[in-house]
Length: 97
Image 1 (cartoon, one colour):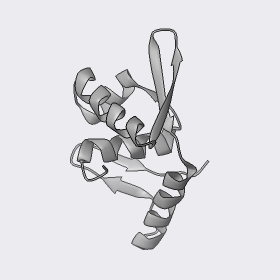
Image 2 (tube, helix red, strand yellow):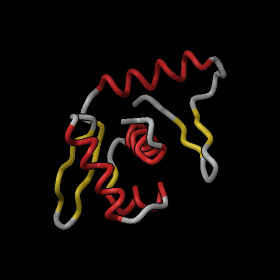
Image 3 (cartoon, rainbow, N blue to C red):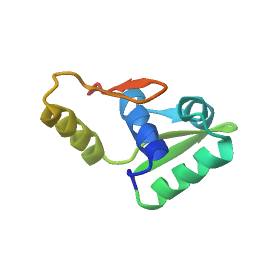
Image 4 (cartoon, rainbow, N blue to C red):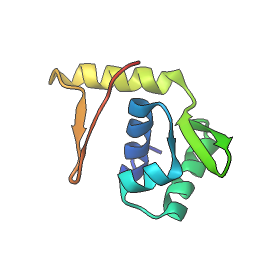
């Protein structure tokens, strides 16, 4: 599931920000709302993300603390001392909260 660059960016963004709406995720991954919603639906189906509805907006979050722990371990094992991934158009940092 995370082999797709857009889904990986979504997961990292949710790990960093805790919760984001679809509009914010669309801006982040530079994809249309239908495309981002499709990625989120796929990830929701396997229990990777969850959501809550607030008015017209759905706010997505990581549904499992295991993913957050996995990301923390990934950055620790990378050995760079930095908790960031650089993509072509932006960088994402990981902060455990």
